Image 1 (cartoon, rainbow, N blue to C red):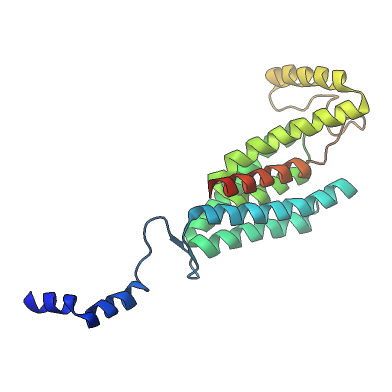
Image 2 (image 1 turned 30 degrees about the horizontal axis):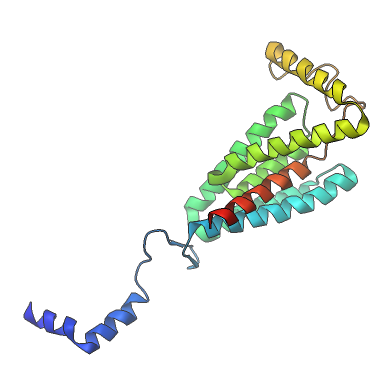
Length: 219
């Protein structure tokens, strides 16, 4: 209409449009939390989640190194922090993402626990940490944690002078599980006091730090 054309061309209309644009729907690539917190770059969310996870895993390292235990009073709150953070920033979809990540991460580590190679506390820590980082970066967390765990095992073996025995045990475990599935090895399991026990919160923390570095690089 001609009237609309004149209004759109007037200075008053231009000022009105500028005012309304402040309340317009964010452009693609911008996320808004359920609480109204706007994040212009989704990578910021990944950095926030990775940073929270790194701090939580770092606290778990202190308990694991000192006491060789990761208490439930720590893993439980970490899990709740993950649920709360994802819900705050992404609503119900974020909550489902956190729960899904906890299930996947927990199940992966549960397989190692059932096979006698990992403690239940490590499984809980991974599930809790996974709830913080979410599904989008869970794969990277699992891979980097596994690599860090392997390097830690090699380092401890070298320091104790049992590297050859560790390599031989690795082949023995592989052969055993190939034939017996998840059944624990009769000797090479955590119940054997001579087995090398690793504070696995350390590799989990390293995995979280890798996520922080990745998020910073991608910004």
